[in-house]
Length: 84
Image 1 (cartoon, rainbow, N blue to C red):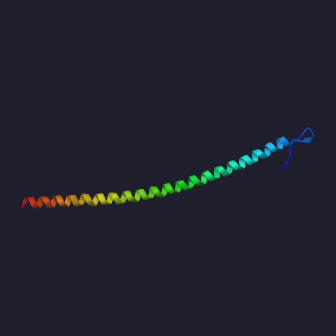
Image 2: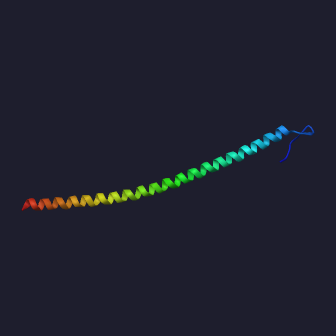
Image 3: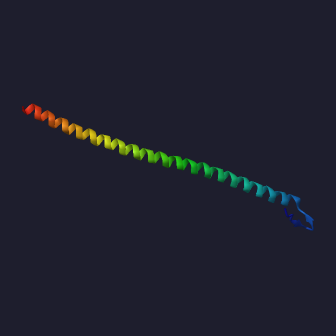
């Protein structure tokens, strides 16, 4: 810790302000780091959720395709039965 010399004597007030500023900056840096880590974790969760949603959507589209194919098959069967 260095002191600032003013008019031949130590200026404790200026030294204290410098130390307070350093402490404040360190505290802000820690706060920003914590917020960054929290946001990073939230982003990872959001990306996992997005991946799950994409996979579930693909599953549902596959189920929809199968259901449409079954409807077509059943309609053909109905048509064949009504022709007889």
